[in-house]
Each structure stands twice: as structure tokens, then as C-alpha cells.
Picture 1 (cartoon, rainbow, N blue to C red):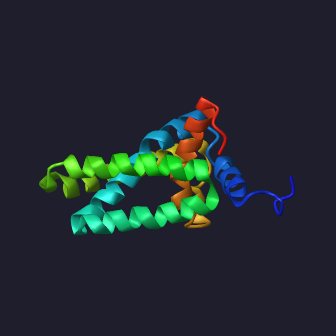
Picture 2 (cartoon, helix red, strand yellow):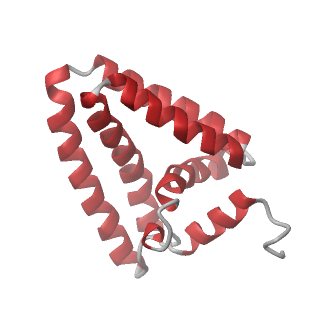
Length: 147
């Protein structure tokens, strides 16, 4: 299909999929991407919960411009993550977030080593926001939900 006639989300997902075809890399991403998002929100949470809420709000605005089903999925995922941060003892949020962030990024790079391709965000930082949608896409494919 001509890319000028494709929805922007389709173009972004096709490009992201190109470097995430190996099943082990896909599995690693399905674990590590949500962990990275949660840990990044955790670091923002320690600055102030409103900072984390603001980051979520801005990302959701972007997701709503791309796809309603993905945006709804991200509302659910973000709500769960913000709730987890709310119930986590405050003294544990920052050190836990740093540890998870480092371990999850190591996992991501191992996945890309297995894949044999560099991460998409090396070409375009926007793919840092597309990674969570990729995880939702894996789930949506299994549940036969169109995005």
C-alpha cells in the first residue's frame, strides 16, 4: 500500500515491526517495555506525582491522535501503572525504578542483539512512545482486536 494513503499509526507500526520480528525479542519487549514505562513514571513520580500524571496526559494526547483503540489501551495500562506507584511505599519508588529501568534496558539491548537490528528509536526518538503501542499490538493481535 502506498504510504501516503496509510494511516500514520500503520506506518509507525510497520517500521517498528521490522526490527522486532524474532519471537525472543518480541517476548523481551513485552516484558521490558512496560517495565521501562513503569520505572520512568516512577522516577517522575518521585519528583512529584503531578509530573508523572502530566507525562501520562501528554503521551495520551499523542496516542489519541494515532489510534483510539491504542489510546484506550494506554489509558488502562497507564492507570494500572499510576495505581501501582500510588500503593508502593514512597521510599521504594525511586530505587526500585532505577533498578528496573537499568535491568529492562539491558533486556531490550539483549533482544536487539538476538534480533540483529538496532532499536528503532536510534533513528527517531518518537519510537520511544511507539514501543508501548507495540506491546499492545502484540496483545491486540492475540485477542483479534483491530487498532
